[in-house]
Length: 290
Image 1 (cartoon, rainbow, N blue to C red):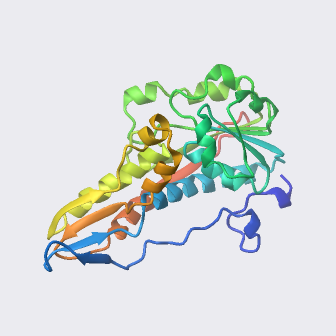
Image 2 (tube, rainbow, N blue to C red; image 1 turned 30 degrees about the horizontal axis):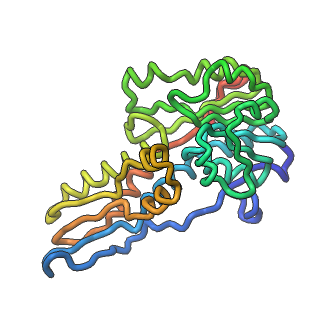
């Protein structure tokens, strides 16, 4: 990949080619207000569900950009299979250096894609792509479909994680998808650290919120707590209401009723810090991870 087309989120002087950095909302600031009485406080996290989703996606995007840069391959056309939710983040990053098309069988998810990124439900576009990234996970892209991938790079997001049970692992056909493609460069995007059942961005988000609530409830003086949890997949895939989905993710990740206010964000950030994403190179001549 020529220098002007490299993804470089680290470079200070090339903001147009960087993954946009988010402001760190995990500050020592504590947001609280009076509860039922003056003795009780309601403490909220500054971190929203949307913030969590984006920060997890950023970790994955950083791992992908590091690996692609290490290959030094010129990429003109990129196809990302799967819009929900990692695929959207990857498209926002990669559109800075390549022509990007997002493919998803759910047409309404095109409302999540930015204007300068193409969207289609036609999987046949993978045939002409230099880079294909498969984020569809369990039950997604089939190995037979992967036979049509003949470009330069094929990257698959492994849906399993360090907490996956044997049934989930048994449904993971990532190796078969990679085996069918004929690209010289192949990689597996892995995300671990929370002992979660899968590596899906929403799974990880809910896991962080759940663990954070458990930690908060163990603090002295805490009466109860609620989270920003919803069955988001039902809203997005059953109701097919993208705007409702986006609005609901703007809620605080954690709200606690307590006698002694504390930072919910510190708890949440601790679990975010435990999360790690990397790409394992499984090319014939590869074998290293980035």
